[in-house]
Image 1 (cartoon, rainbow, N blue to C red):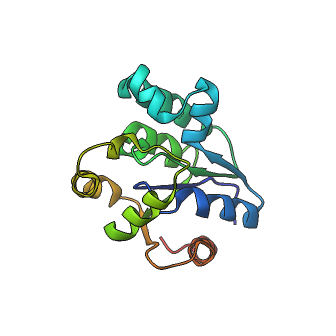
Image 2 (cartoon, rainbow, N blue to C red; image 1 turned 45 degrees about the vertical axis):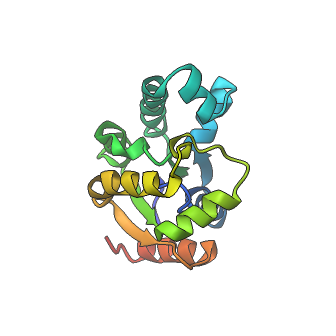
Image 3 (cartoon, rainbow, N blue to C red; image 1 turned 135 degrees about the horizontal axis):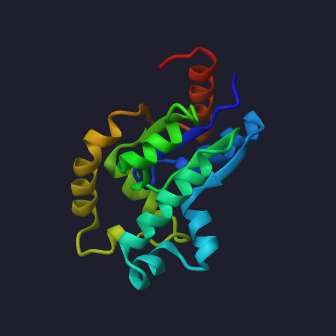
Length: 176
């Protein structure tokens, strides 16, 4: 295994934070959740940032953070669901300089809804609409092509430990 960073991306509720923390612990890497980092720096939730500062400013903060993290090693980075839709962020985190490996966690839409519905600790501004399931389906379709350029791992019905083991096996066997 190398000192390269491991980046987890994907739609909300696919297990990025849960798997990321576990993976960092198993590998002896530092865990970084980009949304948590931004919230800590702003002393506001993502929903509050979207509401008071706007999505454009939030995306700018994500870009600055991606560039900052690209200079570090031995990180497991859990990105916000939209962060790596920006090719500048993706290139910064996986590019020649940082040599990161990006895994896109995916899950069945019904499982995503169940996961985010049961998590009352996080406000989901993109799903604050009359029909969250329909909005989620739209967002998944919009993001499908951009997510497809990363290594796909389906987390539907799989424990975080198993997902973690799959990632470690892929890294150890250079299965890309």
